[in-house]
Length: 432
Image (cartoon, rainbow, N blue to C red):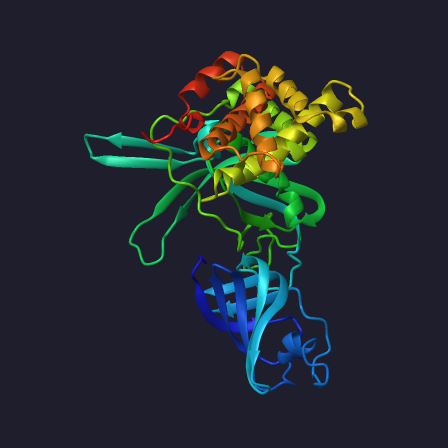
């Protein structure tokens, strides 16, 4: 199942008294949904959509609207999880409405509560390259003109109790194509001692994505790909159970990974340089402690086609928060004094942490960024030029990336050298 899919089949809500109905399953840019028809306002399915809209109508169905729905057709089954009704059309007789789903779990045929999971896997773009691991090897024999390709998963990397990085591989047959695609990637895996919510279990995976954003300043993606429940083992035709089963899942928030890197685009900090798995674990703790500072910076990377003033308005609060948190958490300054500290003091404090790791003067950046940021915050001040804002924004991103790299153990000399060569850290200049 891919974006753009439209399939017609049967809908099951796991109530034996529910009448049969043909529906259309669709994965559009708006999300994953099923379109359900009805023949009159007192129809069983009409009540899912009309019970709050037309108070005077008698409804055959006063049961709670189901949160799980099963769609089946000749291609297989799809369990729709965390469903809700939104949008309908009716002429007070026949009508159609849409039920939307937060997730779709492939090939589930029974009523399993996949709103809570025992394990989840996600794929983070760029992760395998950063780890420098592979689960696929190739060997070409010139004498026989034979290519041998072997898929063998590399050893898993245990980061902490909430996260394991699992090198693996799989094959795919794209629809309508006479080809087999062999994918070599690393899955982020989290298991729960008791069933947990999707978003909670995938939080560490998004943390890995954020680390790679700082490392290379690219719009990396994090997509949930598989889920498992303890009550859904692999069962053969003889009724025997054969261990856990990972179901393929789809999310309407699926993002296409960025294009492959071209040219020189180094990671600011390499996996081995930060201590391997221990460095990733330190990052996840750092991300929790400084989330108010780091989250706005990561979010800025996903802004597109916005003016420089918007970028600066996005990263500015992150810098303010970082300066405040360093003063309070690292320097022992009281909460009130740290809160009341001026912007320039906070930026100077950040600059002192990255001294010697920047391709420009940190004190000058602190002074110019203070002026530019105050210029966009206060209406009684002159708005800085677009070029000024662009360079202050670019420099601020460099400062934040350098701060993260140093916190994780990268050396100042390497960070500075890489930033000097990093296209993402280049200065803006006016057209001549």
